[in-house]
Length: 95
Image 1 (cartoon, rainbow, N blue to C red):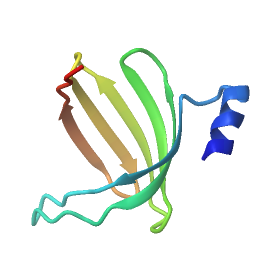
Image 2: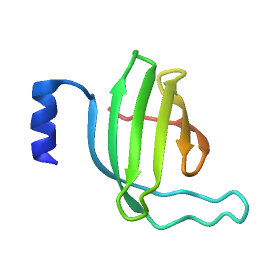
Image 3: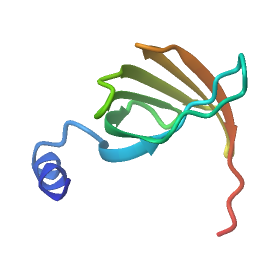
Image 4: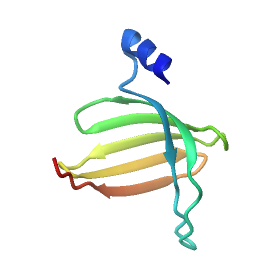
């Protein structure tokens, strides 16, 4: 995605453009799906609010991702699309 990054640097439409992996856990039986490669495009709207779009390369699943930073380490992430999900994430950093 080096080319995509350099194009985005010139145009400046997105803050996030890349490929990552995503795993999902099913609440009904607690199983974790295998990691899937996902194309991600997103923009930081404010310091606390992030809006993104995810596209699954192998499954063609699509989702709009909305993340809100509640505090320094605490965030809430909502995904709406082929599958709906919500998560609360706490991150502890050791800088």
